[in-house]
Image 1 (cartoon, rainbow, N blue to C red):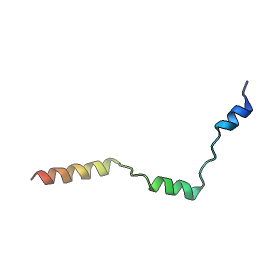
Image 2 (cartoon, rainbow, N blue to C red):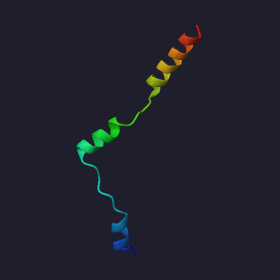
Image 3 (cartoon, rainbow, N blue to C red):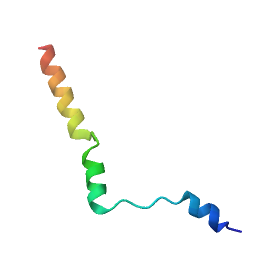
Amino acid sequence: MIDFDEEVKKFYPSLEVADVQEAIYNQELVDAADIFIRMIKDDNKDD
């Protein structure tokens, strides 16, 4: 059986939309395009 009090202790409220946006934009996310750009820059340094 589910212990309601224990489950409530584990609960964390979700972020508001503005907070989510800020949290996402403050992270340095790397995608495939960023990796390719870095590879090209590194290759051009060697020349």
